[in-house]
Length: 567
Image (cartoon, rainbow, N blue to C red):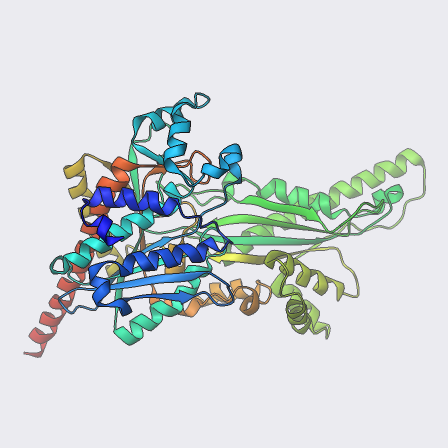
């Protein structure tokens, strides 16, 4: 590969590599994730720097996975500094079912460009295709182009070590589009490199794609952190009945609907942070436990939401949702009672003494409640987890909670609120922290310089508003907040063994300087070449040097200050 790249300039290298990588099918959950890792390893090993140092390129297999692996490459600068900037990108893509009849061409940018140039059903897409400034294809923007930009910059620095005041660690991860197994597994490798090679991680630079946020948006967004995510889940146990006696039932589907009504897309639940794009919670599943048709009402329902975390902790989210759910259940109780009374009045039948009260409890408190009755709740949950280890993780969480509910001798109607995987920490710069404040200042200075050089309009934001691997490089939760999260997560160590202590210890800020494009995860996905291949690589390069120089200067100042104090 190097023989083809060496005659090209930087933008040509980035474009060539993007088109080549788009041509590799690396759909999440397929063997293609392993194939592209092998290809990237071979590309790196073709670079002269790594031909001389093949041990500086290596892979890390993902545990219990047949093909996924992380790819690492280390460039060591000539100054012998420990200061290191991480370049990271994910190498998987979503599927191609959305391409319909164009599915065979999903990985062929030239074929897609020709098709969309005549596609008059969407004038914007057609205009972009006709301009020659955009590359189409699955993964073109999310995020083979990001991988390509990092490769081009690694090649540059490997051939200009005199311009590298520290080190660069390149990290390519699989499974970003699903469970983030790649970057989670990489935490142990980052810790090993820190301990064995003495590397000090200044910052990570991700280049996940950015996109316009509104029509005519001129900005190129730079993010100094990443949003987190939690999956609040609701197990709702009601009271079943024959449809001929439905007014005496306590329908869990009705309860689920009322909870969903209060939470789904409720903008009041989105964090309000000045200047940031923050999103409300979204219902991702609502269903009951019935597997086939009967005339009996459901006994239980399952419900979970995508809930973004920006500054809030999971503990604070639990407190908010507990309060909302209690209000919802009180209204449901009143509704059921009123309907039953009206039914009795209409029919002149004697009424029954029926309660529609619904207990609302967190998983942690429910386990305490059961164990207070002498019921071995934790042992039962562990047993269910072991016996159903092949089950889909969220379904397994509900099964564990359902088995706990079955242990209750009173069969009390209740809502148990807990957390299911995945959990993504929120990673952001704290300007009260000296390290983070200096990092932020360095980024601002580089953006100002690049603006003057290129005329681009940059907007600096705190949180990448979608989901990104950078979330897993730092952890801001207190011990109390973390304890609350884990206690309300069924069998955390088995289902989602996130190395939270190692992440907290590494504490690596992650900046996102992304390729620019449109329609990620759509069949019209495309990357804008003038910015992504001409401006962005140099922006990342200048930021890298700035961060490493800043750290080197800080070390020198600290040394001189110490020596002065000694004298």
